[in-house]
Amino acid sequence: MSQMLEKILTYWIQKKASDIHIAQGSPVTFRIKKKMSTLSESWDISKESIERVLLALMNWDQTRVDEFLETKDADFAYIFSDGTSFRVNAYMKIGKIAFALRRIEAEPLAMEALWLPEWVKKFIHMKQGLILITWPTGSGKSTSMVSILNEINKNRSEHILTVEDPIEFVFKNDKSMFSQREVGNDTDSFTAALRAAMREDPDVIMIGEMRDRETVEAAMEMAETGHLVISTMHTSGSVQTLTRIINFFPPEIQNAVRYKLGDVLGWVLSQRLVQKSDGTGIVGIYELMFMTTGIKNLIREWTLNQIKWNIETGMKDGMITMLRHAQQLEEQGIIDKEGYQDFFPDDME
Image 1 (cartoon, helix red, strand yellow):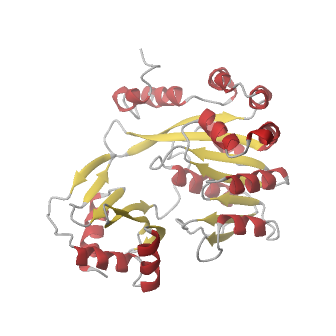
Image 2 (cartoon, helix red, strand yellow):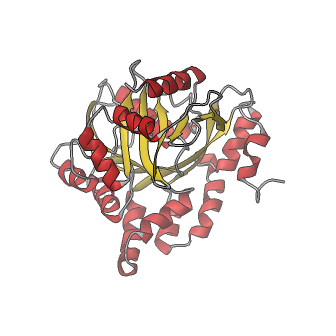
Image 3 (tube, rainbow, N blue to C red):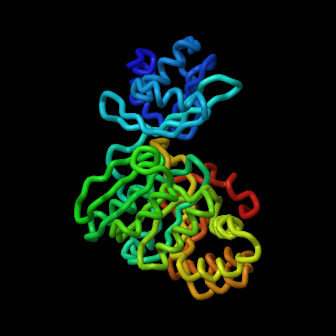
């Protein structure tokens, strides 16, 4: 292992940081409790040093290194000598190598520990449909998805197939059996894996991310044919998620897609992270929209401006807006208003 990488990761683990940024010619920077912090010890990240870090992170596989240098981007997992797992994105900036690493929890977090809305636990007993967990990078989507899948694993006897890029968490079979496939190592692409999935007898299918029309089409088809499909999207809230899905398709078929989406979509969980009031860490605040007759009609008629009102009026049935969830956590002393009010400038008094 690169001595520099070992020092950096050891320091990172000791400080309980969530993310780390390493780049040639720049100071090493950590994200601790949502705040960026530059390493006090000044390391000279030279071209030679960053190349050794690249080799070490890619397990000294020169072929992978050469592929990265050609494509300029790579996503992969890395396991440190103490067993700590990391998700790594290698990229180029101003012609220089850089890395963003995120620590992966060693064990799934309980849904209660994540403060997920109570109704999420009820929905994990769904036998078919599409579940989406959304928000841009760094909002804890993967952590929530692992927690939900682990809850299914503890309570249901199912075959759970995952398609990931990369595999971030390796599940242990409990009541369910997992088949985890990594794009690049176990399959050529998301599309190829999802095409083959129907012949692999899955009950639950987890798709790491829905990025394009082909993946969305496959997910809806599998949800329509009796499978429970769980995935993520880099969208901010239910309305933007619905819009993104429909915009993957050409205008002439969007109406048909809206009807199909209304039939297969189970619920959308949107989330972002805020600092706990006691300074001990971060916690999620959530918006939960699930499919009611009213929301199904809004999707079919494409009157999405009424979605928020439907979520607000559906709170008695289990739906919740992100602002209301934040206020509930504030009432319980979990977070302070100062920690979330800037997220809702138009809704705060």
